[in-house]
Length: 65
View (tube, rainbow, N blue to C red):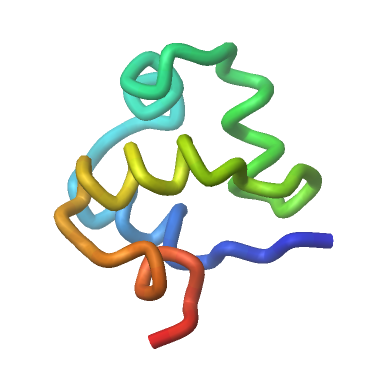
């Protein structure tokens, strides 16, 4: 299981829905939901786009800072 708690926290802090973020990443909602629940590994390209969206480092995004 891949746990990325900050992915959800950052989304909620910005009052975005999962659908908003899925559309930003150009993916289906269910795929994005699996990333938030840790059921799928977050691909690098998606981590980069999320880090850019939230203006944080990838390390911070995945909980390494």
